[in-house]
Amino acid sequence: MTPLLDVRHVRKVYDGHGRTVEAIRDLSFSCAPGELVCIVGPSGAGKTTLLKCVAGLLAPTGGEVVLGDVRVDGPPPGMAVVFQEYGRSLFPWLTAWDNVALPLRQRRTPPGELRRLVDGALGEVGLADVHAAYPWQLSGGMQQRVAIARAIAYEPRILLMDEPFAAVDAQTRADLEDLTRSLWRRHAMTILFVTHDIDEAVYMGQRVVILSASPTVVLEDLAIDLPGERDQLATRSTPRFAELRARVYARIQQAKQRSTT
Amino acid sequence: MARLRQLALVLALPVALLALCWLLLADSTSFYAPPLRRILAAFGPTWAPRWASEDASSIALLVIGYAGAVVAGVGLGIPLGARPRLRAVFEPALELFRAIPPPALVPAVKLVFGWGPATNVLVIVSGAVWPVLLNTIEGVRAIDEVLADTCRCYGITGARRLYVLVLRAASPQIITGMRQALSIAIILMVISDMMVGSSGLGFTILEFQRGFSIPEMWSGILLLGGLGVVLSLVFRGFEAVALRWYHGLRRPQRGDA
Image 1: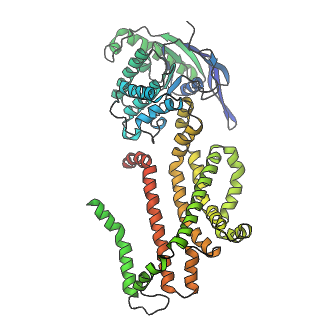
Image 2: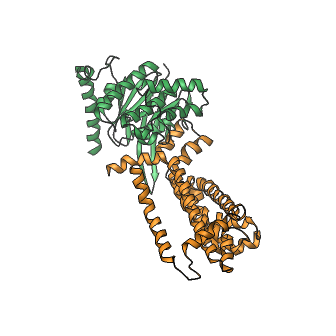
Image 3: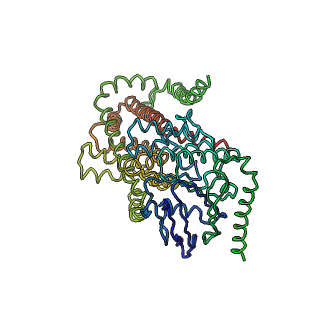
């Protein structure tokens, strides 16, 4: 199958104040349509830089990102992003409903359709009753749900998530992981999910792309052969989950040692 | 009940001061400081017939000048805040112009625009534009990067971006600038009336002083004070509505600290 997203030899060098930092050396991987791919790497691996390059928010120094068959050189249409900093990615002067509706208004979605999409998306993330609340009146987990609702109401071909649950508590995080997986299955979306959490990557993904520390390369592209139906308790206690988790962990440790010696 | 107590707290000192004036000046025989009751008695007869002409024209010039300052300040502040290069070019010149006290411009403006109301408006604009402009620049510079990225990802551009992102994100600073500009505009309204006009509140007060109509002069000063209070109350109402989100956002954070 031809990939929906193709990252080809992306390299990113930050240049400034007389010193250059090579954040990403050479990254290549791809996502097939409908896949849920997790990117995992140690902190400082340039994960956010990579995601910004994929989202078209940052121009790579070398290589290219291709979505569909178009080279990305700015945020492409049909791509939604959920940022880690939910508190800063929602508009505090708009209600939850208006936050979700905003991208659709820009797209001139007819009012009836708009209402259906926004109500539907808020319902799907379990926020059917907080339409009129402002983001700052909601808990962190609920704010991130609003951001997810905004992304799915947009009906993207691909959804990028940048450590979306890193700033919420463990309980909420487990709920949001399951929510994301169920939305992914229902909408047949393609999701690229970036995280530093190995357990989360193995639990969420169909594939896990393991990154080295900076300057970043792909260490391994690992298929996760766990059953599609996942459960926080049952899946995480299977021997296979433990094996996969151990493998990713060993890979990352190995890379860390190599980079320090 | 709590509201009533708050109101009492706010009004206590002004009422006490007025009462003190009333008592101290009650038997005053000084020509320049007449009893307060004579000043208040002069208030109605002095200003009722002038309401339509003097007061209204001054207030109209104030409103036009203030609106002009806000529009110019925000309109110039947005591009300057968004573009560092533009800012680097304009900032030294802006600092220079800002340093000129606006009343000093009156003679020059008068030469060019004559004795008409255009001069009053220009004087008000030239003084009141600075706080709006400088605060708008700061506000636009400080727009959250993640919010800006969110707009880019969802293709929010043009007028919607201006209204939903730029103006709203910078509104706390813009409104701070507008509040400072309002008091400057009132001061300049009076000064330009006095220096330029042949009518208007400031001019009329000056006329009373020159004609030794002292209670009338004092009543004009009281009227200006009242006007300032009313305008600042109106402004507070506007701010409460426009920045509801901002105060809401800050409340829990303040609680944490």
